[in-house]
Length: 372
Image 1 (cartoon, helix red, strand yellow):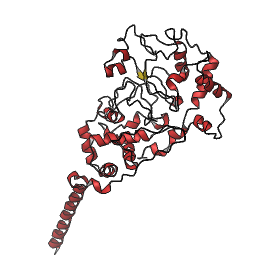
Image 2 (cartoon, helix red, strand yellow):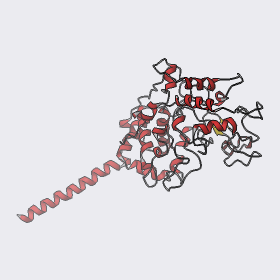
Image 3 (cartoon, one colour):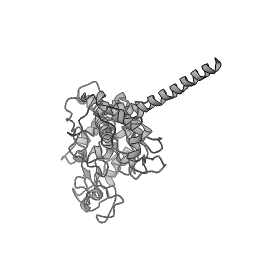
Image 4 (cartoon, one colour):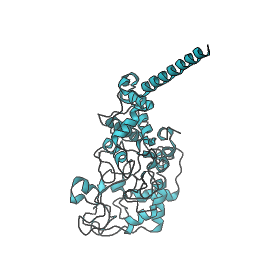
């Protein structure tokens, strides 16, 4: 009798193992998974205040609620780094308008990059399709996978990324809901791009004052606004040329006089010129938005400028006059003089720039870590 009981228990144990293996296989067997069953194409709708331009969304990547949510998970998940220790969010922190306070971001091997981490918001707006400081990405989807495979950033092959995603049942479900398809490189890039495009920032004190909400800027900030908007008065600061409009950027590439070169070839970073193989564009970098500028320092493409006052000092008297310095910058090569802001004017401009911080962006749960 005892032997029969032991035999019975042994059979039960074997059956349990077989069931466990079978169930585990169901979770990870991509061939047996039907991604069309969970598809949810509910469109993502932007919640934008009146007067904001409409976003530009590519026809081949329409935004859906599920697509944005998949992108948010990928953005915050260290599963897409070589040693599973870092995520995109480590170099783009929400509290810094999705930038970081380091001069250069540090990758998983402890190696620093060569450019400052750009903030990520309002990237669904503007007509210029090129992204990154130097315009290396022709569109946002192209940029999404580059940090993953970059050896000094997340350092993960796309083949390994897909293996990890395919063996994670939660991601199989999320890709199914977002696209009705199994994980792929293209869909991963599209989902990340959808999340990035969903990040908007139009609720600063400046915006709320324009909407006649109860915001009361200081006299100093109002004086700074007047300086910022002055044009063709003899006291103009030239700011609006590159930072005008509701986006506070023209989304165009310029040589802003940060680095000196006697010719067109000796810039420490060639920027857009290297991408386009156009020496006239050497030293050209994309104009960043002034929105949230108070929380996105250090500044410039190389993070070499630490404070807003130093930024203003650069444009006031620190322009490096290379042959292709932008004519929109007041200089001896253009208007015949330098800006030479006094301290009162600098303080006023900074007070105005601080009005452009959008606290809701920095805390909005729609953009926050879904794993916390």
